[in-house]
Image (cartoon, rainbow, N blue to C red; front, side, top):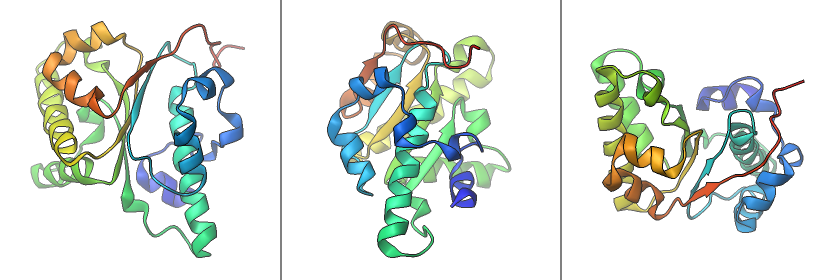
Length: 196
């Protein structure tokens, strides 16, 4: 199972995440149906975005949901998880999500746009760069989000930005499409899990 989770794009620490380890503040903010469906091995019908400070467990939470869903499917089928292609995981910006030749990049973008469930981790990181690559990242994100919105495919996403900052980075059109079936859940007052 670890190899499959790493294949999706989770890091080694994220691949060990479990539902029991989701921070209580995030658990309370999540729609209960999402946890129930994914714990049962189903994909969510709609997505959501988790916004808040660095270190609050947003990425870990999405990893726990994905892992729980895939484990349940493997248990039900009593085999290895062969439907790993149902989930695509990408750390943003796109230069981290898409590597290789132009054909490989195009193939990866198509996979992100068409996978039954997409996880976009760390939207808004482009604000830290301010380079030509930002336009490439925003253009790729626009293509992915537009295609997924048209097909009503869910996106689970995280950001350290506020909703207003996202509007400034991506513009109202893209953010509107992103949050249409994947509403933004702004987390408040959680404890930084990375501090000792």
